[in-house]
Length: 308
Image (tube, rainbow, N blue to C red; front, side, top):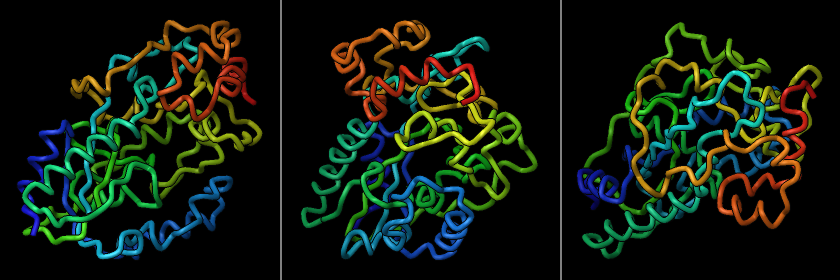
C-alpha cells in the first residue's frame, strides 16, 4: 500500500510545486459534460478529443488494475509571463519559452516513480504528460489542487493558472486520499471572458476552440472564423491568464529545468520571417514551438496584428 505523505514527499523531492492523490473512479458527470461540449461543435477540428472518451474519464480503462491517480503540478511562471508591452506583435506563451515541458515533467515523474518503488518494489503504473487521453485537469480537481476556471484552465490558489500537469496512474491503493476541491473560486468574476480578443470563452467554463488563439497558432489544421485574429500572438496565448486575479503576485518558478531558453521580446517579425530551418531547429527544436514549425510561426508573425 502507498503512503500518501510519502507520495507528497517524493513529489517535492523531484521538484514539483504541487501534488495530489485521488482514488481511481469513473468521472461520469464530467464525461457527460465533455460530450455535450463536443456535441455543441466547440471542439471542432480537434478530432483527437473525441477518441477514447471512456479512457479519458476512467483511468482503469487506460491502465489495467489502476487504483490511484497521482497528479503533479509544476509552476512555470517566468519573466515573460505577463511581460509583453501593449504594442508587442510577436508574442509567445511563456510556457513555450522553455525546454518542452513534456520532456521535463516526464523525467520528473519517472524519478518520482522510482522513489515510490523503493518502498513498494512491486508497484506498477504509467506516467502521462499529454501522452494519452487522460483528463489531467479534472483529476487535479479530484486530487484537491484547484478548480476549473471559466477559461477552462486549472486554477490553483498557490500558483494561479501557470502550472503544467503530469500524472502517475498506479496499480496500488493509498492509505488515504486528498479531498476533491469543492466549490469554484471564480465567483462572479468574468475578467477572462471580457479579455479574450476573439470571445472564445463562453458560459459554463468552456472554450470555443474554433476561436481560441492558442489553437489558431498551434494546430496545423486550424482555420480562423471570420472576424477572429491573432492579436499579436504567434504561438499560444495568455490573454485570459494575464487578467486572472489568482495570477497576481505569484512566485516565479525556480527549477532550472523550467527556466526560459530564449526571450521572444528580443526577436522581431523580420527575424522570424528570415530565419532558416537550421537556425530554428538549433534554437527552438526542443521547445514546444517545434510542434508548430517555422513556416507556421513565420506566417503568424506576418498576420499577428491583423484579423485573419
